[in-house]
Length: 390
Ligand code: APR
Ligand code: PHB
Image (tube, rainbow, N blue to C red):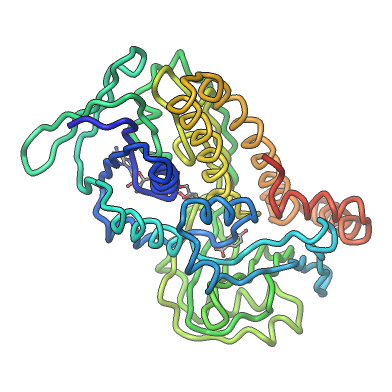
């Protein structure tokens, strides 16, 4: 088989890239290790920057998002027993974020790909990349006991942190940067109305908590938990009690409890691999970088990589220009590092670290107090939260 762009991974990065390329007649094949059901079973963050929504629109995959997504014009920071609202819209000349689950984004993109009759090969085992440092790259994979080969012009490595693409690059060609955070996030999904109409990020001496949502009747909540905690140790009752203890009284009183239908613990880390291009192989999204979820930048960064790569590939096929492809890694990384900084800063300001202590807690509170009372500081948060320019 032959295609123009071979995409590894059918997460949001791979699907969005495939959809955009499809709109301008560039052929793609997606090779995915897991099944479609497995990909759709993952629960992830749910806050989309305005630029991400616009890109989904350009890809023709925003109809349901427009109908069901919740536009949010602000967030609240909770500390010192009170909510402090950051009016994102007022601080960013009318911009807002949209709350819409990443699982739904993936669903919409998969439906679009099916409707367009584009090829995704699920359950492709042992995907191996070949000759991407030359002019004729190809990949091999196993399916149903047979080894197959796909030739292509370029390979887009959209296969997440654990994928094969980054691992195919020789160590000496790659520089990686990493920061580990000594705690996890315990997350719960429940069919209950959210405690607040906007997101609440809480700093508390017992640890961080977040009130989020998927819709007006489905809530997503998180509490910071010790590293190594097992989800079995957290009954629903224990979770709801801990969440409410970390929220201001008024917000805690508005928490509607109910049985959780998803509960999981995620570790937190920052990771960046440089560069993001090796000859005819590109790294895109989680394959190249991971951010802690504080600030919800993971999917938005994946979308910004896709935007730069799409533009580069479009110019290559339309104008025979390598300029956009040559600029891809540099442009993508400049935006990645700003989001890595923002997520690290939000994480540092809002969580209880083993060495935070009483002094550290007061410093965090002073920083938060400054943040909500200084227009300059609030604006810095707002413009990062809503998404920096491309
Ligand atoms: N071969 C083929 N497919 C693979 C391989 C492999 N060796 N390894 C991983 N994959 C697939 C995974 O099964 C997954 O479906 O690649 C896909 C990668 O998807 P994501 O991990 O969702 O990564 P990405 O599309 O970059 O999305 C970034 O999703 O992970 C979140 O928080 C992250 O919000 C961010 C966004
Ligand atoms: C979520 O809704 O899952 C979510 C929202 C905001 C974040 C992280 C996660 O910062």
